Image 1 (cartoon, helix red, strand yellow):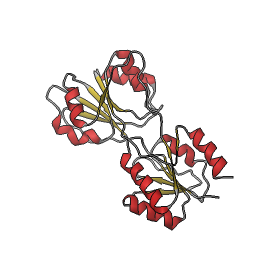
Image 2 (cartoon, helix red, strand yellow):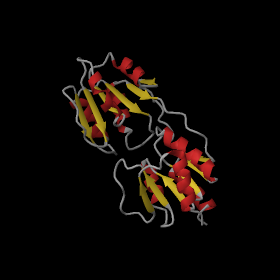
Image 3 (tube, one colour):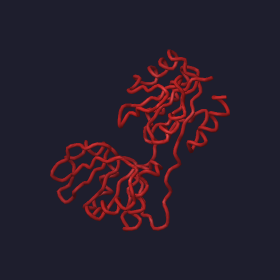
Image 4 (cartoon, one colour):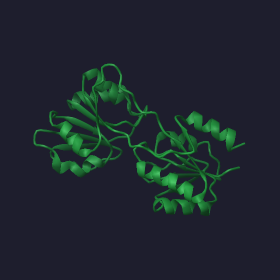
Length: 242
């Protein structure tokens, strides 16, 4: 039976990890909660780049590297492909399909922080759902704006920014209350494709709130790419676990 190294980072990765036996390894960067109820081994922390990951693969006798990291974790995905090539193993990837705009949506794609700041100028009450990155820019908040940031954990804000620590899945009615209470007039989001965080898009649609969508990075090609957990598990059963 082949030995799998699963690189986690999205909710679906945990679903895959729950199917793995003790000879396999579930690897987490260390951001967020570490599960304690898995049969497989768990490794927390980085590897020191592609070369370090390749050495770990060789040392542990890994046969398959499965990348189930976040769609915006481009550097990790690049390192995974490089490490797989260096160590001579196959690299698979679970990559969520992107959200698609629906009737009534006002989506405006942005490429970087400079574009985002320019696009924010007409608005007063933005809601950021980009993770921790906006925390580096609190000193840039214009006097006429008040930012609401939502991240996995609570971090210090300032007089013009409040940080909410919350983890999905988020309920539609709770998202409606958040938009209403804080009078959100623009949403800033990655296109993660996650069902757990999708309700905010419905609320933006209902309220006619524009959405500034951070463009997805281009990820490297892999040996096999999957769009769902079911596809991954079916192929694992057919090719690896029998």
